[in-house]
Structure formats: structure tokens, C-alpha cells
Image (cartoon, rainbow, N blue to C red):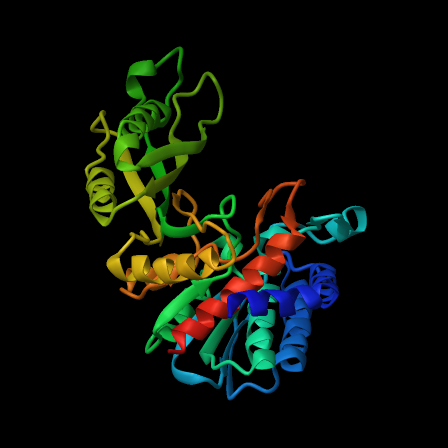
Length: 379
């Protein structure tokens, strides 16, 4: 069956590329609400043209961020949740100097790998099933425009959309062709130190250096890293003080934390709560929190992966799995206990980089694989 689906998709190669070219040709930077509105309007019309009218559409105002749409399409049984964000990291105007281009098997353009190709896969997978007359499950498709900045508006929408679903497919880009069955949780924190200003030459003893306190905190934080446990802690930005001859009264540092387990997240939380100033006249405070929870490989996730691996084998493809340090909207759903298969999108490379590209053959293969997996999930 999957070979027949693959042949149908291959016969529509030019159609897929035309849709991808049109989509990549609409710039959707995360920080430009007007551009996001234009992009979402185009996607909405394209979806209706390609899949027909949905049974239901939920529109959610994203406030300063991209709006969210949740589409329900008819099918068999409990819905399968499809997650696709439409925002990209590329600023408005990038397309003028870097247009969509196809050169042999390589297609490139801003946002093509992360993750505009993925939505094209999902839509054409459903079209392939309809063309073959094969049953497909009910589908709930979430489109959000704030994923690249942490999904501040769309997280509750995604979590609510996951209710009553049988599985989630995240059409984020693959990792060298591998799907992602585990992702790290991400914490974004800011440590602020306050001290007492004084003249560094005349009255140094009267001062309490916020920079000294922050430096001690940085060493303590970096000491929390445990590569064997999959935990990394990085203070990537620091600032503080006013002049070299003034004992600093304020300083701060921005902290990125990645963990592979909930237990490690709890350990880091405890350490952050325990941070104390060395000098009693100074103080340390911690702001921020966990941007995305851990996506741990569960038995339910493994089951969906095995299903996909079996289908890929019918195409002569070895579908690998991996765990990655980056997070996605799939983390939210997995943390609720739902089975999630992530990285189901493009085969290529260069997320957030100028060499961002996809394999055209990989796009056709992944579209057929998505169709086969969706068919299996209807059973």
C-alpha cells in the first residue's frame, strides 16, 4: 500500500513543489504580526482549497504574537493531532535576497526546512489517502505563529487540542532523517544580583559587588551541568555595573537550561531556589521558568514509532529515532501523557541557517510515509 501511495505522491511532485514555493514565498517572521496575519490568511485559503471545508475551525487571537487556528477534518474515530507552526526566524525582506530555489534534489529558501515543508507533507498525505480511497482518521490540525519564540500564546491552545486525541504527529524537520522520540525540556531564567555601590578606590569596603555575586552564581550554575544525565546549564548573557571605579550595585545573567528528565528539572529547580548571596548586604533573585517540559520516550511513543518504522521499511527505508536537545510544541503534548512522534517533517539540514534546505525526494518519501501512518492510525 505504501508503495502505491509513494508512486501517487511522486506523480504529483510538481504540484507539491508549486505549493511549497508559494508557501515559502510568503514571509512569516515570528516578530511581525502583520506578516503573520498575511501568511495565516494564505494558509487558510490553501488548506480549504486542498482539503475542502473543515468540520470546525477555532480561531484564537495571539495578541502580539501570531494567531492560532485549530481545524477539525472528518475521519474515522478519535482524531490524530497534527502540529505545524507557520512562523519562521527569518526577518521580513530575507526572501528578496534568498528566494525559493530548486536545484536537482535540493530545494532551498527561508523557513523551508523549519518547517514549511512539513505542512505541505501533511496536507498532501491526506490528499494521497483520499485519492487512493483509503480510510483516514479524523484529523485536528493546529497552526500557530509563535513557536520560534516559545509558544507563549499557543501553548494552552495546543494542550487543549490534545484532549481526546489518539496520537500526535509533529511535522517539525527531521534530524538527519531520524524522527524524534525524545526532546529535552528547556528552562529560560534570569539571575539578578543587587549589591551596594561605593567608590572602588576610596571606600571599597563600603560596597558589596553585584558582579562578584553574579560571578559566584555563574560558577554554581555551570556546576549543575551533568552531560551523562543530559543536563546542560549555560549562562549566555551577563551585564552589570556602571563604571570600572564603582562597586557594582546591579548585575544580571540570562540562563539556558536543558534537561532530559523531569527528575533533572526538579534538581535544577531546587538549586536555583537555593542560590544565596555570599555577602549579606547583597541579594540574588531568580526569574523565569520552564519554557517547555521534557518529552521523555514512553512506551506509547515507542509504539507509534514502531508503527512508522514498519511502514518505512516497506519503502526500503530504515527510519531511525533519536533524542535531541531542542524542544518543540510536541513537548507540551507529551508531558500530558499523549503519544507523540516528532520530526516527521522535512529531510534536509540548516534550521535557522543560510544553508537551510530540503531533499525533494525526501519530501515525497515523507509525504507517503505520513499517509501510510495516518491510514494505520485509522485502524
